[in-house]
Length: 315
Ligand code: MEV
Image (cartoon, rainbow, N blue to C red):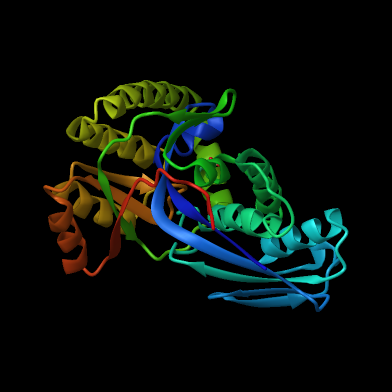
């Protein structure tokens, strides 16, 4: 018997970094997916095959002893073999079209699709339960995850999130395209977050005023999203990028990419931690192809995405 699941990646549209200090952020799922196929096997092994390598281990190894980016899959398979009292093994095949390690939610999508595919071998599980399992798997790699990424990968669409109130799905379904350009510079979220903390400590008043500005901007964005006002949303993206520049998470390469995006679309900004990773440019049908061409002409790796409203899918 085979159990299959897929889950989307994500971008942070507004509010990265400021969210760490209590400001609301807005995230959306994107139509790039991870597909996970799970199968029970007679052999007492957990066998994981992916385009970044394979991991083959016996069950019941301590998770702290496993040094592999595929660790969350092992954790999930082992946990389900244990809770379901199984003495057999599991084979897992992972296919992904989400670039890895550049802030597009690849690891969260793996955890969500992995939790659904593996638990589907044994029991029917609600999306809420899958999400809990996925977050526990993600914690094997990022102990301090807020859970925001796994949530948007599970439920799809657009979501607002703040530390105090958690997640609320935004009902509007705006019809925009994002052109994502990849700097191909791997970044450590932890390092960039620490740099912002230092900026905050050295500029308390300035930082607090930026947090207020970002909160106000996000409230304006929520209205613009419900009106599908893409041009004004672009202005808010440009404004948000200025705040990110001020706190020092941009660099020359990202600025060059953002300039291409801002000249060819309604607005462009960093998505995620910055320091590397990706930027996005907001477009609709009128400027999508033009924007892609501008990035490609300057040899930047780019692709377009739309919002994914489906979230986790099992089949
Ligand atoms: C990273 O994708 C987003 C940050 O806001 C960090 C976080 O929210 O944990 C930079």
